[in-house]
Picture 1: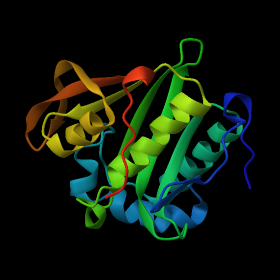
Picture 2: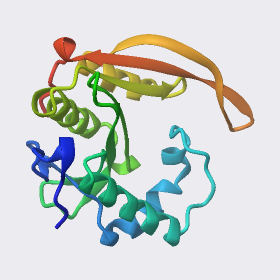
Picture 3: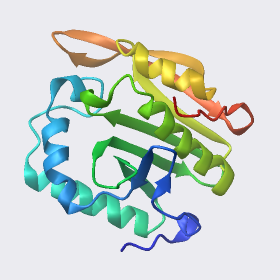
Picture 4: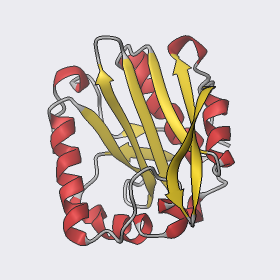
Length: 194
């Protein structure tokens, strides 16, 4: 069991919603991560440069994520069903500016869990944690222009579109723009599961 410290010391994991449990990743999650992070439908909208990820990279990511949480730096969490074992995807909250309560959120789901409200439910739980428990002021999120479903998730929570960065990502033989969103604590609209 990893104990969270620093600014994350008050966080109690797993974060539970009506249908989901958000918990720290474990080494037992690596097969799920490898299966889906290498799936084109999943990696295409992620900002990281894709290459086939291998087991040592995913093991290192799990260890880094657990270490960062134990130091109170960032929260990278596995999204599972309430049983804690059935994986759905992943979500992260990074806080580069604690002094101003300014963080960043990103998420992904395995395709078989798309269109069921899980992304909205998990993102709502992270925003609730950030604003209520961590007293943050603002969360940013970025989405590539070819991902309108993710934009809808953000808008449901109250995120506002704040800009566009042109030609940020080269995928599929062409350049894609990145759309920036921001959410202030006062504008947050929690999402209830379907």
